[in-house]
Image 1 (cartoon, rainbow, N blue to C red):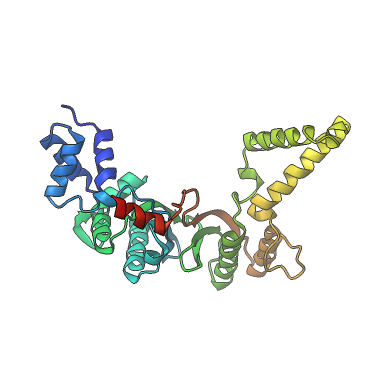
Image 2 (image 1 turned 30 degrees about the vertical axis):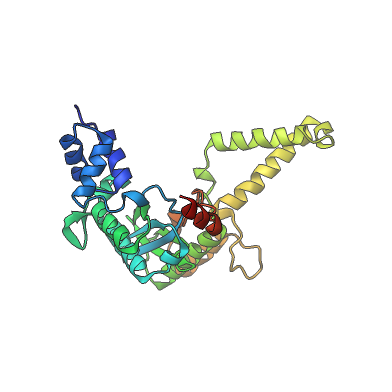
Length: 311
């Protein structure tokens, strides 16, 4: 039977074993998934298979800054907040972040297949499986992103002990403490205010058209607003879209440390650039918030105990 890449991927997700181990197991069992799982269990390569179905939505988002030009942010999930506070788990996440900063992987699969930075005899995926066995919970390396500054520097910020991790790439001719401090302030802004874009140039026409469509539908469903002239309605839509863009575009947001409570991030950077004697701009940023987009399991401890007693 032909062993496909999707079969190997499925087995790896079921067991947490390395890709080559999964391929070998499938070859040995002629593609039978259940027998392949058993093969890996018998060979001690699927220690975490019973934990693989558990929801891992807690954990940490951490950053490793290699130097002024390179940094990486990773999210590694655990099942419980208790494990997220475990020193062994925290040290593992930091090592994953260090691995990401040195990585040349284009996606998560390639990253997991890389040789583990602390032991070249195993892959990142195999190191993860070993950590699952030690800690006793399902763990997942969910995502990573490496940021490299071509003309300027990178700064990082971690909020809440690992709840949010941010990396900002700044573009400037002058890399010094003033530039780094300003970019760090913006990393904190990004953590707190969660912008989606650097500025309006990144917002697609499709996104704006979609938002206008939604806003128009809301207006037309309002008995009072729907009776207004078309010109007024169009003006209302433009105004509301503009307000939304001010919230989701970093440069349009009110700078959280603004003394007058009005200065935008864009104006703040203009001020810093003047003091710096060189233009400073944000080229890109990455913000990971632990568990965002994941459905957390609703734990009912009493029901769990009762189910185990009745099993």
